[in-house]
Amino acid sequence: MAISRLSQLSMQLRNAEDQEREQNGPAESSYKPLRAASKIRIITIGAGASGLNVIRTLRKHLTNYEHVIYEKTPKVGGTWYENRYPGCKCDIQSHNYQLSWKPNRGWSSSFSPAEEIETYLCHLYAEEDMQNHVTLEHEVVGAYWKENSGHWKVKIKNLKTGNSFEDHCEFVLNASGVPKGVNLQFTLVWPDYGALVEDSKADMGDHASHWQWPEISGLHEFSGTLVHSANWTEGFD
Picture 1 (cartoon, rainbow, N blue to C red):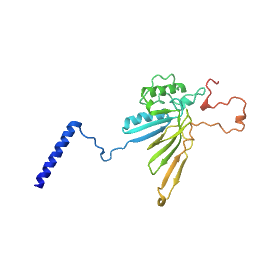
Picture 2 (picture 1 turned 45 degrees about the horizontal axis):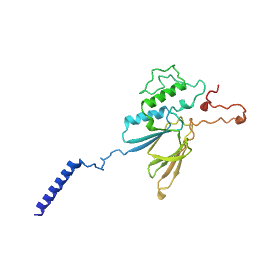
Picture 3 (picture 1 turned 120 degrees about the vertical axis):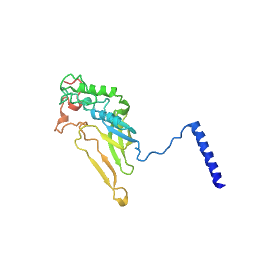
Picture 4 (picture 1 turned 30 degrees about the horizontal axis):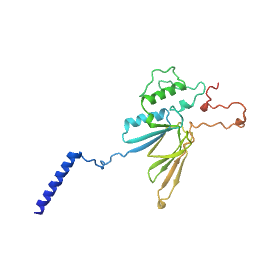
């Protein structure tokens, strides 16, 4: 008798579930398959050729992710936006100095000038619809790895307003230029008192994209115009 009653209840529940599915459709499950990839956030520093190539690479190989590039200048192009001194051009032939997946067959010369290379990168940026991934006039001033939470805390400065804020991600990709010396600082905590590595700091301030005046005695006492190749005054000749 008890078994018969349980069978009846089971049948009634199945019928109720079938009716609900017919009315509302299949229920969405909150469970993920074993080893399913979690969504990750990626921050890239710099929107020059390397940074733009990162956008394309992630689009091609990843699906479940968020990606933002912080670029300190008002336009993309990296070194080809910043360096405008007379005669600035590529030091290898242009057909080799381009992205293989976006060839330019209209280079004006074998060794193209800076303005032409920047134009190539800006056209690529627009044609590939990369604007949603790039935040201009925002400079990354620090990145700190947090071992306990397993993510990076990234400090960003809005160069238009002067305000600073923090972002977080699982991965930081540095496309800001050739490093002159990366300074990593680690804070160690013995296991008896917590995590072995509490945090680490990546110093983003010592790269080729951050130009400096040479250390020449009396340089700033010079009464004429001081001009740096990485910060060339427009129209100065």
